[in-house]
Length: 110
Image (cartoon, rainbow, N blue to C red; front, top):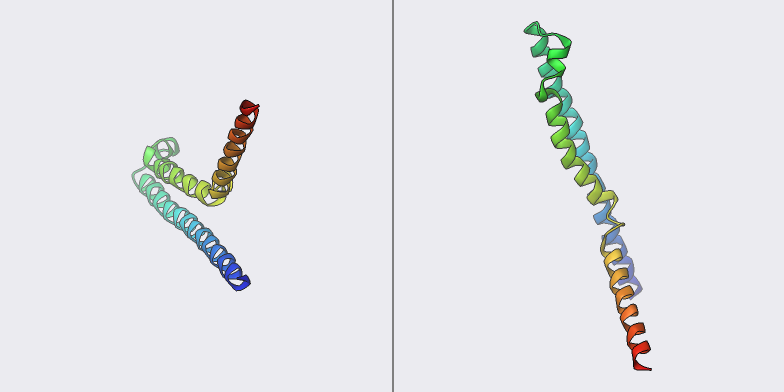
């Protein structure tokens, strides 16, 4: 039984490490790809003799950062904030509601 408990802990820890690794890979790809795309658009704007304001007022320069960033934020929340509303939270709330229900029944039975 102790071995089984250790095995479950190992599996949970390994899953957590995989989630973290996936997030950091996502973050790295986000930064590298967006730097490349933004750099290409800036160089393109410079070769077309656009002003600084024209280059950076183009939604394409920051739009991809913003849209993909929203997805990255959601990924971050799912990895790092899962403790707030995760399975443990659900189990705690279920037990809390069951306890309240038992207390109400006890009060009403007297």
